[in-house]
Structures are given as C-alpha cells and as structure tokens.
Length: 232
Image (tube, rainbow, N blue to C red):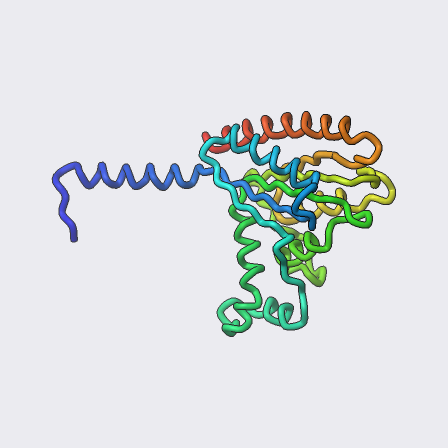
C-alpha cells in the first residue's frame, strides 16, 4: 500500500474526482451521413455547417462520425440468430457477427447530440440509414416491442437535416421525416429538430438560406440546453 504525507492523499483523491467529473461533462456529438454522394451532397454540406456551429458553441465537445457510405451490415439469418442469444452464451463467430451492431449502439448511447444528414431517396430514407437503424435497434428487428430506450433523466438531442430535389417534407408522398422522428424517440431522444431543405429544385438559394438560418437557431438552443445540463 502506498503511503502519502498527511493531507496529500486527500488532495490526490480530490484531483481524481475532479478529473472524472470533467470527463463526464464532455459533450459528445454523433454525426451520421447517409448520402451515397461524397461530393456535391447538400445534406453533407449542411451537416458540415451544423457540426461546425455546434463545436464552436460547445468548446471541448467530442465528435464521432459515422459515414454510411462506407458500408453498414444488413440483417440476415445468422445475424438474427446471434442477436437472440444472451451475450454470455454467444460463440466467437456470433460475437463477430454482432460487432458492428455493438459499435453503432455504443455510439448512440454515448451521444448527447446526434446530427443526421438524410437525403430523401424514393420518398423515404436511404437504405443504408434503414440498415443502421436495424443494427442499433436489433432487439426490435421483428417488431417485438415498441417500448423503446428513452430515459427521461438524460437529455439527448437529435438534429435531422432533410434534403431533396422535389419531394417536400410533410407531403403525402414523404415518409422520411415521420419515420426518423418515431425511431429517434424510440432510441431515446428527448428533443428532435428537423432542418427542412426539401424541394431544392424549386428555389435552391432560398431554401438553403432558410435552412442555414434554422441551423443557427437550433445550434444556439442545443448549446444552451447542453451547457445548462452540464452545470446541474
């Protein structure tokens, strides 16, 4: 056992507690891109702006970036069988099958703020984003429960950047925004804001100007809320 001069042990303990407290107060931002275009993507450009503004408001925040263009797994029979067993009973092969799902879920659980760049493909979300949802919500892949993971004690904010050339947010043929709001509440988001950048073919400059104004407002509100929560 290490022996310290009188009083030094208490000082070291206080410093350790302060270090842990500071680590706990780091605000975590998760960015998820679902556009299959690397260049010329409006949703990516707006996500760049959003994350930059959040980091400017929340100095010292950490960022995790999940680009679904790089690939995300899909549910198959072997994956589903592995997901149904208990963690302790899984084989090495089953753990490997679920490794990406575990990683994606951990990113969501750690995040205080999530930014989703969502282009509308064929009236709904991109297939890669739906695959991401299945990886994160694996206990509910077969619709077993709609209880969700919400925790009213923890503030978790999602910003959904919705883009399209023609399909308008809220129209009868638009199914992306409703799905995203439902699933984000399901995985524990207490607050959800949508940046509407749809219908770009009609008035790109005007729509982008309004979207950027909306991003400014949202980021200021999110920053105030997170700083307030961290101070409690």
